[in-house]
Length: 64
Image (cartoon, rainbow, N blue to C red; front, side):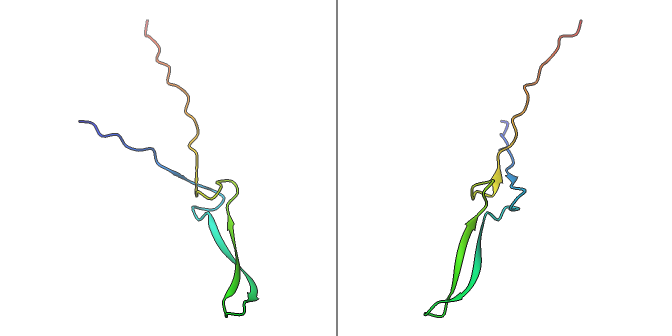
């Protein structure tokens, strides 16, 4: 029986597959930890992947 291969996921070119990062603000909190901001990639909306482009339908022509 034939096995179907899932479509490969495309990595987002803007974030390289790392959609969320923690940025150190340089502020030291009272408990000794650093204040950080978590930022997600806007183009892929934090998924790390992009949608595969739609493929055009294949048209078969009859040979005369």
